[in-house]
Image (cartoon, rainbow, N blue to C red):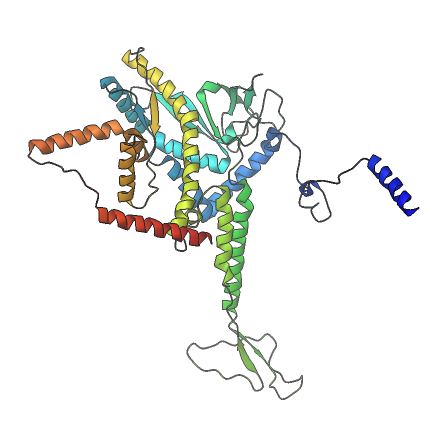
Length: 475
């Protein structure tokens, strides 16, 4: 009977469907995580970064940068490292016209202070979340081309309303294809003069710089938004530690007695203060003893806490900790190089965005004016932008040796090497040719530098040491 019953049970179980009780723990709402996820929403990119949200972030980010030395230092360092002394243009070709275009662009950009304006734009983009530049005419420019680039506060590009429609998103008119056709700009900053009057500006005269983090996003949010609370915690903690230290310093000591009430201790007035003379001995009333206040602030964890907070702040800005902290005492060479690789990539991405969205648009309009001024509609100016070089290697000899090998193997070019140094390769090699010709005319010859084999062996040993150091840092 038992055997037959088991067969029947097995047959029934074979016919029953198999159900899997599977789920994502992160999508479950429980008592322990309900409060944490209470502000999560299902809004679009533009609704998520609506007018009020961006306005609040801009006000708080500006306040923090104005009052927090770390916040201002990080923002200004990133802006300075991104723009440097400013981008330089390199036109394809090797003739008089090419050199004339490069020289005229250099004079014009210097006349309008283009590098300073780009640096301010990068700073504003980090703090405000976006930067606007207006291409306009300025007769006061000390150059034959009167094109000017004006910085526009993000607060002025607005529809002056919280709501928006499908084709109007807070100061931006959008066509059916998603292209921005017009920008609406207030005549004054809202805080200077309450006005609803706006001016419609064609999109071809506006440069809008911001990071697109979601599809369908049309306005930028402050890059400091994830770490604003951390800056506040950093300042609050420092203020609390300072207050505790000041309180301990003000209270010199407290006198107390173990005698019972009405005992042998001499009676004194409660909360009575006794002035202590500096450098002298003092006797206490009979039955009383003096307990000095211990200064326990700042604690040993004070510095570690600040470093942890700054490390978390630096991460969202893709900035190395030693840049955010302004100190590299505890950083090894190998770990610093790894951190700087991330930082340099972030800088190059920002430089490319500046070149694609701002510089190319500015140059196109400037070059049209240049063609009219010089009556040269036939000239074509294919160009590249050269930024300040980033020295990623601390040993110039090793870098030069690697460049020489890559040139021999045809894996790089002089243009690439000079561009990484922030120099124009054509200008440099012509200068070198002129210098060598002058040396030959004086009977001086520069010999070829032959690498020292012994020095190369020492370099290889040094590279192995650095590799071991990196592995130890990881461990």
